[in-house]
Image (cartoon, rainbow, N blue to C red; front, top):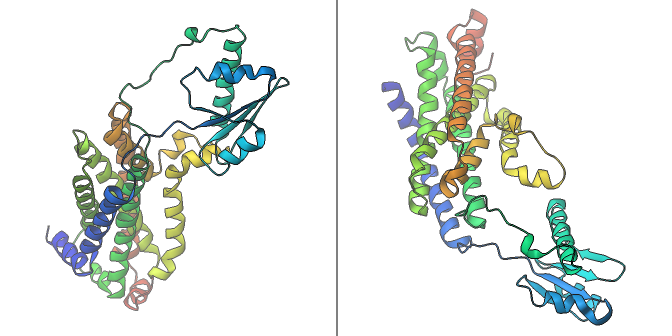
Length: 353
C-alpha cells in the first residue's frame, strides 16, 4: 500500500488526475450539449419518378405510408436528392433505377432492392402485402443516435489513452530519474512494483468512468457490471503500457509502437466501416483486442442490456490480464531485478538493457 500511495502521489503531482477529470468533463460537455440528443434515425426519404404510362405506380404508392416523394422528371428528382440523406428511384417499363449518394453500404442497397421487389410483386398481384410479416428482435431497442454511437467510442478512447499512455509515462519518468536502479537493492517484489503502477492507472480509468457516466446521466442497473469490464480492460491496457515501457528508454522511442497499439485498439470501433468496404474480421479474433469489449459492453449495458455478453467479456479480459501481467513480471525481473555488472552499469547511465 505504501508503494501504491507513493505512485499515486507522483501521478497526482504530474497532473494525471487533473487530466483525467478535464477529459471527463470535456466528454460530458460533448455528449450533453454538442451532440444531438434527440435521437431517432429518421426514415430515409425515397425520391420517386414514375415514367410508366399513366403513372400507375405513383398513384399506387401515394396511398402507402412509406416516405415517398414524387417528382415530374428524372432530372428534378436527382437535383432534389443530391447531397442529401435520401435515395432516388426511377420506375420504368423496362426496369427500375436506384440512385444512391455513394456513402451507403452495399448491404443497405441490397435491402432496398429486396423491398422494391416485394412492392413490385405486390403491385402485380403476385404477393399480398398483408402476407408479409415483420419479426421484431428487440421491442425496446433504442433508436440509433449519434450519442449511442459516440459514448462507447469515448469510453474506449479513455481506456486507451489513460491506461496505456499514463502507465508507460510513469515508467519513463522513473527511468529518467534513475529510480529503477534502486530496485536492485530494494526488498520490493517485482509483482508489487508492477501492481502499483497498473493499479494507479486502473484507478484513473474508474474515476473517469464514474465522472463521465454520472454527469452524462447514463447510470443504470448495469453500470457496476460495466465497471468490471472497464477495470479489466484498463488493467490489460496499463499492463501493455508498462510492458512496452520496459524495452524503450524514452517517450520519443515509444511513439512508434504506441501508435501501432493505438491503431489496433481502434479496430473494434471501425468494424462497421470495414464491413461496408468488404473487410469482415472474425469476432473470434477481434474479441481479443482489449478495447473490443469496452466498445461492445458500453453500448449494450447502457443501451441494450439484453444483448450484453458481459460474462464472456470478463473471461476473455481476465485471461488477457493474467497473460500480460505474467509477461510484465518476466520482463522486469529479467531486465531490472536480476542485472549483471554490465547491465547494472548501463542502467546507471539511464540506458535500456
